[in-house]
Length: 194
Image (cartoon, rainbow, N blue to C red; front, side, top):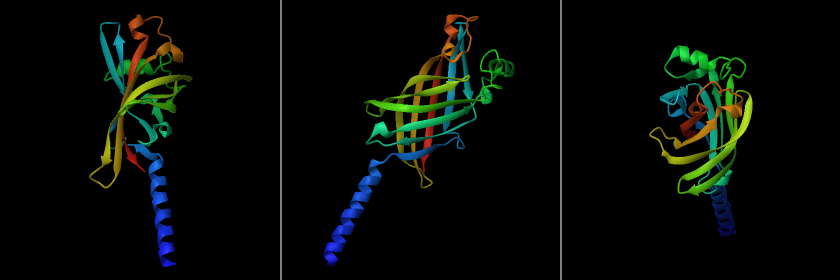
């Protein structure tokens, strides 16, 4: 009887371990440790580039290496945290001429799907809301690495970039050269498993 009970317990425990491994792990994006960035690059009149970032954002993601389809990501960006290292330009970009941060204070991204394209690579599909308008975008992403950290936690890091057309979000760029009508959005983040 004791052997049968031990065997049943062992099988049940093994099943729980397997079940735990099959589920996606939840991560909080580490913004406090400055291990996450939301950046952009846009042409300046076709002659050079303006580089900028959003410094106030938060998010979380789920990731399961064995079932990438179960992966997801949600992020929220405070638009007024935009920084291009030039105060006057930042105020203009945040004005009603462009991002209209007073009326649309947040930008969000919510994934709707993931497709693996190779080892540690894939494409995230999701809804990007910017300037009060939502569009589906695709972003190629790369798993940069994962593992235990020196403080007893577990981390995973990703990066990705995509091009977005500002007019798709109701931002009128008609007075500017065509080179300025789209920008490259780049994100890199490290998450702490919860």
